[in-house]
Image (cartoon, rainbow, N blue to C red):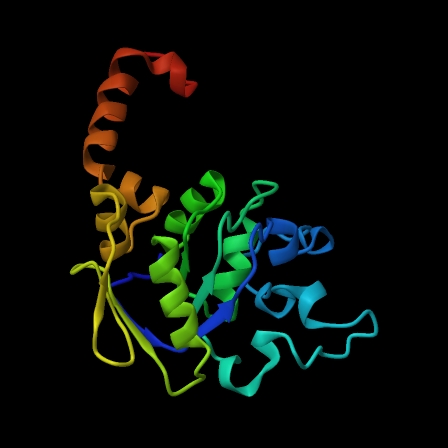
Length: 206
């Protein structure tokens, strides 16, 4: 998993509540188990007409936000089904951070497991950042995970908190597999002792 330390980038404003996972990545694109290639379908039904033509008014189709790395939304972002394809699509598009007043719990957890930083802020601070984002590509935000700060275009800072364990995992680029591999030596030691004491578990006999 890619580390998340600091991020400076364009923030795309998505002033919508209850953005569900089907809106983030429609169900017809869930057939793959690959984490790549889904970015082109991110918000597909909001980005394109049925003919495939782009909807010019949608924020990610606007020139200033085509390379956005931060998304700012309103309450209950990521609600709906628990599909992990939703953070996969965001990440593949280039979104590394989502800021909102609240998130659906499963989506929130899935973000951390895939290298995306979800930041929960009070509504007033979210609105202020939404207004910053509305200024376009020149109004970048800088997110410092270690310091727990978001630097606005005017230089002022907004503080945020993240659970210490999740924070460490993002800073070190550790997903569930990475955490397990940190214990590779004691796991191998246990398996060696178990194989000697209970060989039948491994399909062998003494």
